[in-house]
Image (cartoon, rainbow, N blue to C red; front, top):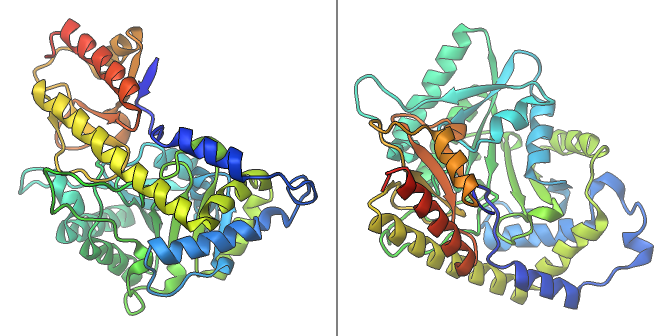
Length: 395
C-alpha cells in the first residue's frame, strides 16, 4: 500500500542513509552513555545554532543555549502546551490546520484548541484570506473576543509556516500581524517551521511568497522576545521522520528550563542526535541535500498538478512548500462520502489524507495528497487513486 496521506519525505532517504553509513561513527564513550542527559547533545545544539544562523536569517544571532532538542516536534508542541496552559486556557490556531495540533496541545497539557475562522457573513470564503495580514488580524481578534465571553484564557497563537495543509508560506507582513496581536495581548507566538527548507520553485506561481522565519523579523518593538518560539525538526527537510528529532528555539530561559524538565521523561538518543549533528556540521553535504530536496519536490509537484489538471480535479493553486497538495475531489452534489472514498482507496492499495481532519472551511470534499515519493511510487499511487475515482464515477 502507498500512503499518500502521510506527510513523509522519501525523496532523499537513499542518499541520507548512504551518507550516514559512510560518515557516522559510533563512539562508545559518548553515544552509549547518558551524555549530558535531557540537555541534549552539545554537538547538535551547536550545529543547529549554526544552521539557524545560515538558513533562517535571524535578526539576532542564535546561540546553542537558546535551543533544546526533543523527540520530535510533536513532543515539543506537547511540552509548550504543558508549560504554558492550565485548565480552561488555550491556544489559538487558524483554520485549516495541521490535524495533529489539537491533539498535541490537549492530550497531556489539556490546553483548549481555539479555532481562528476565516468565514465571514459579509464576504465569500477564500483560502487566500489565511495568508492575508488584514484578514489574519480580523480572525484573531474575533477568536479572542468570542472566547473571552466564554471565560477561556488564551495563552498563545500557533501556526505552521510553511502552512500545513495548504503548502504556502506566510509573508513577512502576515507574520508581523500575528506577532502584533500576540504582543498586544502578551501571549506566546509559536511558529512550527518544520518545512522551512522544503520550499521549491512552482513554474506556475513564480511570484509565490518564499519562506520567512519568525526569527528573521525585527519584532523588538512589537512583542517581548521571550514570547516568540520556533520549532524545527529533521523529519521533513531531511527525510528522517523515524529518527524523532525536533528542536525548540526560544530566548525565554524559563521556557527552555521548563522544556528540559519535560524532556527528562523522553529525551532522544544521543546516537540519533549526533547523526543529525554530523550532517549539519558538513555544510557542503547539507547544502547538497537541501538542493536535491527542493529540486525533487518541484518535479513531484509539477507531476501531480499535471495529473490533477488532466483529470480536471480542483486543487489549491500557488503552492511552493511542504510535501503535499490540498485537493478537492468531492463536490457538493457528490453522493460519495469522504469515508467511502478513503475506504475504496485502501482496498486498491493507496491512502489519502481526509481533509475533514484539517478542519477546512467554506466548502467540503477536500483531501491532502502527499507527493514526496520517488517517481515510480508516486505514479503507482496516483494510478491506484485514479482507478478508485473512476470506479466511483468521480472522474
